[in-house]
Length: 335
Length: 296
Image (cartoon, rainbow over all chains, first blue to last red; front, side, top):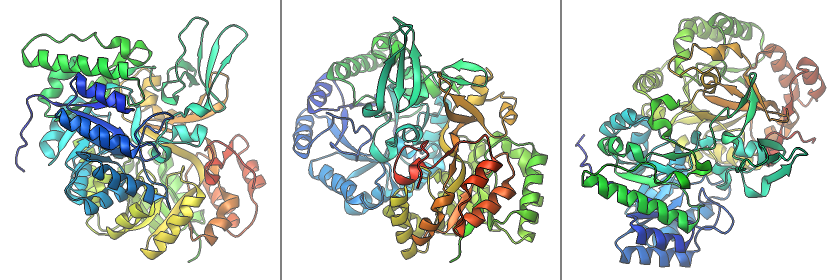
């Protein structure tokens, strides 16, 4: 296999849930913005988010004028009998000028590869391809050019992986952290009937409730299940199952993970050495102020690093979920 | 085709001797047609079972069972990748593919796609069928309306649809081991604490509602799926493979009950009597939340 050329500076791939967030991200220094259509074809199918066809066309035009690219996510799994909606999203994304499609479902990957062979295909994190053989299968079968790596690998594993696969890799560096392997988690649908895979939602807002106890405490609930209880005065969080407090085996607490988010800025040097092509920021559901701040911080960190200046690692804590952050699986001890 | 009862792989960390005896008992007594064997959840458990696997396979085959080797649901390191390659190269027995990595090695030999591979629609089913998938066990969240369409599509491409009808549902896998985390151990030095919970460790909400169960890196439903009263409807829709997922209970009796359920008998009360502590659910079937128990 020919050795891939590693970029000196990674591509900075930034989220946009709205056209204005896309413009903000481009102006703040994003190389690429990723976004999706306003339906269940993408994994952030939240009310008030995402793009109409017209908005997508205008967005790619805006990005291209400023030398940025747009990747369109069609990264949920079509339900049987409804694949036309996903095929249309693929076709429309290409018509709108998308620079790449991010897909997870094999059927949709096959369709995109066959119908639009000239359009770059990226494998979504939702496909959960966590090893060289799986990634090679997607490359050989669907001509996938880049894989977004599941957040389950340590940096030495990513380095080894990059030497063995024929495509580029993209890694998450900041934002929401799935504790479970993405695309293989049914916790949300077990409690609510709606899942990331089928509906593009995790812990849908319509099933969230907050209930105050007599002692002033506040329960956050998802459907009928209490996901967390906050003492009076404690800041309340969103009831995401994998970041809730439960009782298990005589213990009470955050059995899966604390309400924390990923911040790998301190590990940027190692990630750059590992041969990844792109850094990805999570958060299409967040506002444009978040987008602007995170994109600017990473753009500055990359340019500081390129000049040999020290990295400032605490700038982003305020933006992290619950004000807490972790390097996640990039550090092997996380497991 | 007649209904086929299948026994899914044991997902918990059972003592190898109990594991072996369980399969011997199944071989001798259980009215199941197909038996899946092999570790799916954690590669660290594999060496223990590998010692007794050949005699288990032999005994099951002699009893006339179709044996399928199950593979790991998540492959993250070189050792696991090697195990997967070896399993995929085995031409004696078909394998159940639970991670896409196996597809790279299986060429077009007949195989089964397990519930950890996402097959939600006809396009994906047809793609996999063209590469040798002869049976696909669906993820538990896929409802009947979708399964029915998939069964129709499967007929056209010579692939059968299998659905779980009994046992805790596999809901998630992670790089992190929750048993190790709970016992304040690292995953690399886990002391195999998951073997203390041969049925999974229940996880309850703070207000003491049963919710989930942890099993090493896997998270399962606390409730046991029970679709015994839906087997007639599913057979009419062309779904004829029904999976019983082993729990730490008398699985021979469970298999006998589901055999009768497949012929139209209502076994709900008998199942309840056999498993008085279990909570049963069927919410996914009709498109609802998985934990729900809805009456017909």
